Image (cartoon, rainbow, N blue to C red; front, side):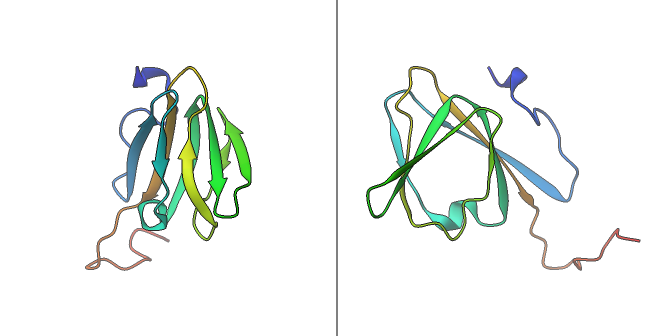
Amino acid sequence: MERDIPFDGAVQSRFRRRVVTIAPGSARPYHEDEWRDAVVLIGRGRVDFVCDAGGTRSFGQGDVVYMVGLPLRTLRNAGVEPVVLVAISRETNEASSDLDGVS
């Protein structure tokens, strides 16, 4: 199922790839720390971001989002196919400098 998702496979060693799937008709609580330092691609489906104030914003396949600092409550899949979110973030290694490997 993941073979057609962008960024399928290995990413450079300084980065981490995480795939989150939300089943049709399901929702997942939003926890900001889970998405910190990640750029998120909507790899499949359509996801609703449900805000603390009750409003909703919808994003679909191919959209790229940064989900930190948003007043979100829930990530919801109101569709009939799974939503696949692909999060790419920096690998955290406190022993290395932010400038390692940069020339």
